[in-house]
Length: 388
Image (cartoon, rainbow, N blue to C red):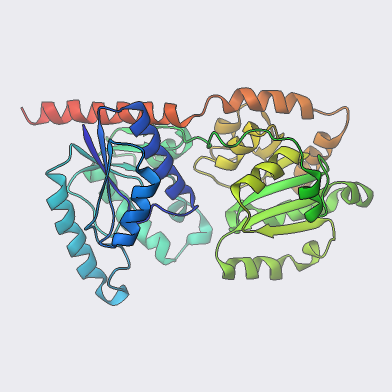
């Protein structure tokens, strides 16, 4: 089988880019007799970077010639879409399947494809109302559901949301869980490293994620403020933040009172190795998100032996199972109570760590690759029947 991917936007640290890279690597390792073709832009330098990243796999091929979404700027966007359509028509004849892992990010759709829909929050959440992103998702989602051979989602929650929002859709919508990198595993606390951030082992709560209203950071800060002051002095709150600069500025302005607490630390731009150290040395990972498609940091924390407190909303109970304390993300007192329970010597910390390791074993990129290939095989069988 020959499977093609849009790799024009595959480098970087966003969830979708990481998903695409990890999936392609796992597919290539699990299925050495199949070929996986990454279509990138005309840039020889970008092609060279991809070749270096994937070059150890003889069944991964890098091909240039696919227009990038911003190649000609906004004023010539329609020309980019037309060029993308022409390019896909040319490439499709050489492929068995095209898998769009970022179907909202590609300017033009192939004639037929498998697509991964990670979430449809721009349609379902109020914060995106009347935005360009909502318009994009409202316009493209029905097209994806109509033209795709199959849709993959990272959780049952996203699949159920699509079925609920589009009840007339008869398309196969298949949940295939994501996974965390195998590099996320416990490491011994490095006291010198922790001292750089004025921290010590097992004496801080950790959050990792984008600055985004659905991450519920304001409620987390409110919950932390409800914990007794002497307890906060001994157990700090560390926020590992990513996202757009303007969003961070708004977040700091709106939460200035909470962020003045010397026990609250905000950190940006850390390496994966440093992140693993912070997970491994935290008293607990607190992730009271309002909505997630998968909730990757929950699995990363569990793999590092970090107890998890997370929401009872969206996909998070599905991903966390019985290995986390589940809280109402709208209830600051409930979040604060769970944080206090984890640091209580008579609390559930050790039990959560043990259950977390067991729960994390349910997710692996090898399993993701196998389940994704099962979708491809079913599509190929259906295509064979349809052509007869």
